[in-house]
Amino acid sequence: MGRRLPPTRAVRATIRELANGGDGVALVEEGGERRAVFVRGAAVGDELDLSVDFLTRPARGRVLRIEKAGPERVVPACPYATTCGGCAWMHVSLAGQQEAHRQHVRATLPETWGQVPLAFHPQIQTLGYRTRARLAASCAPGRRAIVGLREAGTHDAVEVDRCIVLHPELDRARQSIAPLLEGARGRGEAELALGARGRPVLELTWAGLLDPKTFARLEEGVESGAWAGARVFEGDTRRPAVVGDPTPWTVGADGEPLRLAPGGFAQASETANVELGGRLLALTVNTLGLEGGGLGAVVELFAGAGNFTVLLARHATRVVAIEASGPACEAARLNLVARGLRAKVVEGLAEEHIVKRATDLVVLDPPRSGARLVAERLALAKPRVIAYVSCDLPTLARDLDHLGAAFEPVALEAFAMFPHTPHLETLAVLARRRRAP
Image 1 (cartoon, rainbow, N blue to C red):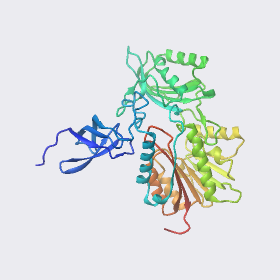
Image 2: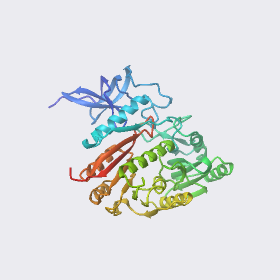
Image 3: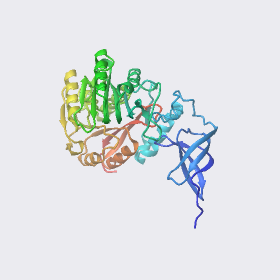
Image 4: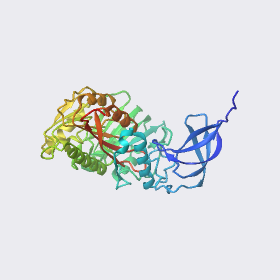
């Protein structure tokens, strides 16, 4: 019978790298086996005294003491960095974050992409950049409401005086949500975005009962200009209560205001989104090499509210944009009309759209789960060029692997759209192979 291991053991270890999820990784000998130990709040080069739970896989370590700080460790700009789960790399220098991102891209993507130069675009604005926020909220009978970002490693809300990565207008709005919920019972989620004239909009989903005064307070906030509007889902209702104008707005990839569907998706950083759009356009125009420098016939999949559609429509002979959400399709059409542009916006599933071989360019920006079925169909359809925008390296790697037999790598660029976090936006451009590899 083997030796019984204790639930936890104190060890000293050196952090070798940062994992995709943000934790530091150390290697520790235990029971005749070399085990990877994942440590939250660690930086490369840190020498740490840890309490390690070896019964989990991977093993998890908790920092007891920093024996020697690594070269990339910095004093966090946020005093809540160790408790709030919003910025897992606030204690890592920007140079250290960039190097970790580079390593993740190279280690995750298929081997054929290893020979493609990686262009890295750091975020210029590293504080006050986030124009979207998702908050946890709860309120027990007779107690005040608690609203905050998720605590690291839990689903509990952490209250903070100030969130330094949030847009200042949204941080002000964040602080006013708890008073709105006074007298409520239950828990829920609050999403913040910028609305008309830069004022905040709120999407509140609440499991429980809200005090009727919550709606009166929201109406007062709209009348005073503190809020542009709000949508509130209470209990099992599918139709929200609407106060004011809850339409979120952002800056599109073309640099102009972009209307979103209420509760719709947008990139967290407006400046980084514009940079991403510019690089997508430049790389695809260059790869296609069409006469006149245009894009030809374009199909856009997972088009959303038209973030890339409004950019592509300026340079393509024809654009067909596919999006599953009806409200997002309507927003995309309004965005095109506002710019005097034309494109065909189709409500439907990207996985079911038939891409013709004569298509010059396919642009896709899927959710974190990726686009496996789309990649398999594109490998058969073989359009000339594909531009794939991804927020998740593992699913991007899987989909690029599916495309590898029919397409060859052309360009690879990474955008640090979420400073102080392990999240990364990646743009991969592929061209149809002239012959099988």
